[in-house]
Length: 393
Ligand SMILES: O=P(O)(O)OC[C@H]1O[C@](O)(CO)[C@@H](O)[C@@H]1O
Image (tube, rainbow, N blue to C red; front, side, top):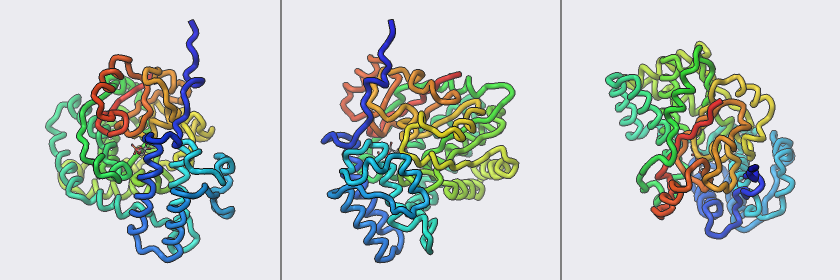
């Protein structure tokens, strides 16, 4: 029997449904973020005016285009900006509206210049405060327990740390109630399959598509050190965002800050930091920041150069909620839709490590979904649940 391809039936996540999670992000989080950014730096009258105009536009107005002189105007035209201009923000898909929101926020604060504000990350104060917090001190100190663990226990601990590190997302924490929620469990756990894929001989190149800086990137880097050190990868390509995005997403500047924080830490964390510093110098850890990582599109639409770059890798590890949405297409799939089927297009085997912070979910059994729904705790969006899902070769 042929099954109906799920692509034909699953709607793209939109923002127009009253009471939906996506609509709430636009109605509540984006205005809150603009207010936060307003106070982040000593902005000029023109920048404050531009931020206020953006606030008015996203709440009551219609979507406006990027200025024609913007360096990426052509890219956004290609990404269908024209179709959205003059319409309500709520008419756009969730993925498109969020991505464009962050681009316009950077425009308002002159991030791309020219001028003195060029390259000043509006989210840097929040990222920096987190990176230098007592919580990170404690997490770095906790790494001193790793040398006492067996290789298998260390591997398991590092996957858990990288997985739950995804919960530390500054955008997600805009609403205080959410930060208070506790974690419960994994809705899917393919960790064994992940390690099986990482056992390739000889070790090849592993791609890691990073998510957040600071408290998420640090455990990611510790995992990367483990992969390099124990022969799971000869080289790791770490894909970062080329510009500030979704508040805390890691840019190359955030990678540098995290490496410095690790390298200057006492104990085991410092040793990890030194090794990674060295791995950067030898090219075994290679950062990359392709513009497509800030595009408002699913990964199925990735450009050929990125596809070619990834295609040489033995595995791609994707961190976080947004990467998961882009991986499976940001559609409201029936949750039992096979993850393998939806990710078959991806040029390498994939492993998604994500805490659940939006409606999209795939690859579960009907019983598991019923069980989760019965808890009534908003398991899809609250960040209380996580998953490790893997598609092999
Ligand atoms: O940092 P992550 O895990 O990608 O999460 C970002 C998530 O936050 C949101 O921007 C808002 O909750 C989601 O749309 C997005 O998927």
